[in-house]
Image 1: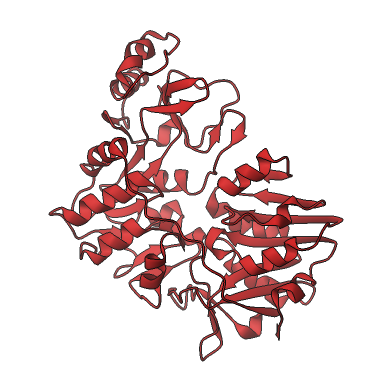
Image 2: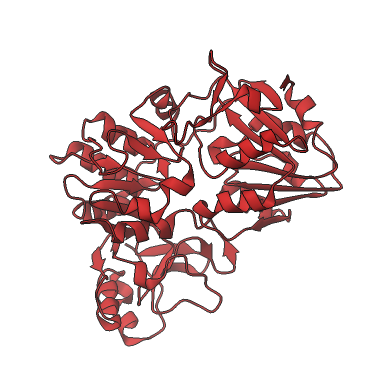
Length: 433
């Protein structure tokens, strides 16, 4: 292993090369910014997902980004005409794709080495752990680790998932003290609060929870933290401030039936307070995504309740959660994995939460539609969907006929479109709340 500056490490990337970085919080910021100091490449293909900073690298001639999950940065790069392409795959499948792509250079962020030389993978286990190790063992490949003093040391589940690399596995170590990207704790608006209130009645004492990002899941966590229930477990793709608050409120026992005694996640993204709380905290364990998002493992949890969002739902219960029209908006992530796993958990439920209407350039439109337009891409198919929740209530779809589903979904749509939905008419624009 050699210790280099970010600029020196960036010099190891060839003019024509392949590079992979983890999703979001696992990205090595100083290294990527140093690469962006180069004016151009002949042909550099970068594999990643959910960029958390606007790296000039992805505006340079000759650089192509293949992303498995879009965030605001990918959308801005695409709008600017830069070559950003979406790779359709659920998060769990990223591990297989990384192995097949076998990029020559891999780079990740870690906490600094401890006294035994272990480099905690910190906020991200995700899909790259095994491929990082393979890269480090291969003399023809280069493994760059950016050891950031501001990242927390987080816990894995050894020996199955130690959640660390050792300095002996690393080709290049880049010391860093860059600020860690943080996500402010989202305050729910009135619509989101009503959605959360409807959703919370499907969460019994003793439920095992998976939540996503945003105002609805955070408000659900607050409601549960302040409520009279408890004995919850946590098995979630993403660990958030809301889940930290629930755990700090003493409402989490983690008597789940699998991985008992601690919360399970594959990455964390939230406030600085969350990162400080996770530092060396054995109450939360980071496992690779092919374990955390495995529907068969999810189903072994007691009363698994998954809580996810959507962009639109049609009257048979198909869910579009990642694409608006012809454009990728986010990604597939673990959406279907957790819907599937919850369905086979004893007492499990899956909740798809969305506001009844959305603002668009042509006006305010219903998110519940009679049918999707041609070219729409379904994220989760109708036979997987259990409960859909809006601010107007909850539609329980599992076991219902197509006609019953349509009636239940129309009943929780915006009042201005309900009659048109059931009559198969063109939906009017929504005015007001």
